[in-house]
Amino acid sequence: MPGRIYVANVGANASHPFSSPLFEDGSFEFLPIPEDRQLPDPHAVRYRDLRSFNEPESDLKSYVPERLWGTSAHHDPEFKTFTYGDNCETSPRAASLRQMEPGDFLLFIARLASCSRRLPAPSTRPRRPTTYGFYLIGFLEIEEVLRDVRCRPVARDLTRFSENAHLRRGMSDDSLWDRFWVFGGSDRSRRFRRAVPVTRAMADRVFTAADGSPWRWPVNRTELQVIGSYTRSCRCVVDPCLPGHAARAEALWEWVREHEGPARPIGPTRSTR
Image (tube, rainbow, N blue to C red; front, side):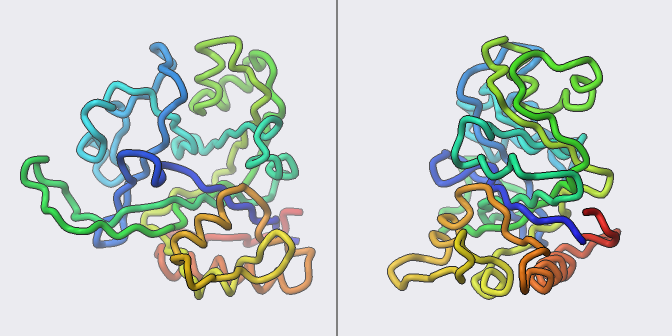
């Protein structure tokens, strides 16, 4: 049976003074949230250190206020070694991730802002409305899990998960081995080249509320607000063991293939559970 599909809402959101940019050709850059403290070198990843996925020789400082260039970024998920960490033991938002097993999928949704391919100098930026939307940006096919981390991991785990933001935090301060979990992806994990839109039509085909009912779309709320509300907490959205969910999984992966234009297959192609 193909693995379950979980969704985690990641990256800069409406509370931050910057946004992850979405370009006209569907490509995008991912900007993580700030750390809750300044981490010391060499454990910090600062906003000035972030590199463009589309143009690796370039940085991402054009999309972040200059006053934040030296701020520590919570670089999670990271798509170099494909890891994601969360406070599954202490944060109700992430508690359901404790149920994830190898073979499951963790799909990342992020709020992106439409903009031109390259931003002009700050003084000449066009004054025009920015359009926001939620998009799928990549996934992990879970291969291994580091659970309830309370102290410095063994050498093998330090090596495997060293790029993850939670490991960087712990290495900077022993008090930050704070029962977090880290998930490692297989070599089939992906950072999408093009953002995959999450629309009302797509959500109605694929997603349900926590109680299994369809999403509700109140007339006094925008689609962006509804999608953000339903994806605020990490949870399983497709479980192939449940009636009708196999069709939901196929609809989801087909939607991703349609919009992302994969260079290699996306989604389950073999039995993983």
